[in-house]
Image (tube, rainbow, N blue to C red):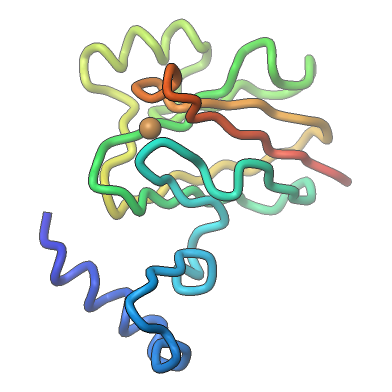
Length: 140
Ligand SMILES: [Cu+2]
């Protein structure tokens, strides 16, 4: 990927606030399109709160591929299953990953809108063992 173009885009989007920033890539304020960023082994913030009907956007700010994959047992019973790649079960998402599907590539985003209040646990398939997981708490 073209890192220079990516950085130029980030700086352009955040030109108003970049002057006081000395090399610290603050994805919280400089990436307005994302609510949750994906680092090398973590989702930031790890716990995110949102209201029903408001889209949540994950941004891969890392150089590696990641996934956003719900734990089938970690979401409300009435809720729709969600995973990058659009799979309808955790098992399908895990299988597809082995074939290179469901990835969120560097500098791309994944979006999901939650319609059912509750707590949603999710993880990143390749970095699950490293503890890359998170929670979205949805309120009405
Ligand atoms: Cu990951």
